[in-house]
Length: 256
Image 1 (tube, rainbow, N blue to C red):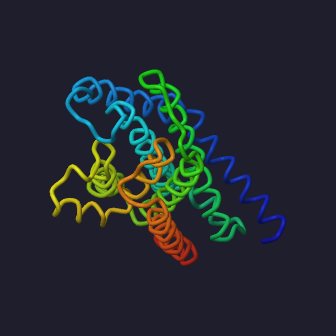
Image 2: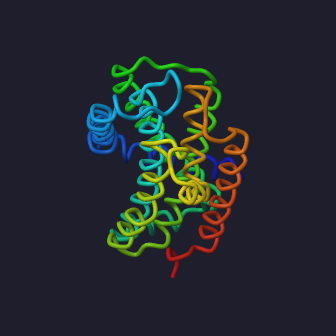
Image 3: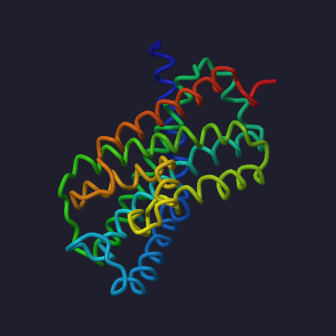
């Protein structure tokens, strides 16, 4: 990539970060408040009734799940909402006339999505940490799965933004794919508490491995091996990124 194109990618990345940061009350503070409400409701109701791991209270168990759920949902929302807004308002044409490659688009949009996802996740953690003292048994897994998860959902948001032609389609993608996969990934429960059939279904959900691997970093305990989770999440990230790059290279639904 030439120096000019690299500078263009940095500029687009800066523009995407600035886009969500200028309305941070909506894009960062609001998701943090939502996560805190989940914690207050579920933690208060289930703290004395649900036991997941030995010596780990339910509120402590819930916090990493809420942090990672916030990272995933907001990473997806950043790239997908930016693309669909640009397509509908018509200002995407100003990017199409630049010499930016599909790699530059990918790095800028996904990079900004990772920044937003990690910013929201950090905010959720800092607010919820007051409800239960944190532990960092294997902190390297926290960093690895947070970065991989945010990157994968940023790339998936790119695919959704390229595919959707109106806000209704984007809402359908988020409500019928992203939302169920995050809520059914073990955020609020351990899949070992499920019947065997539903445990098997959960193992088909790549979001489960992101949540489980991320939680491993806090407690040193997980439902499956973190290395298995890393292999599955890493593979999913490569596949989703390859699809997003190919769609960008073709100009799918953005070039006449």
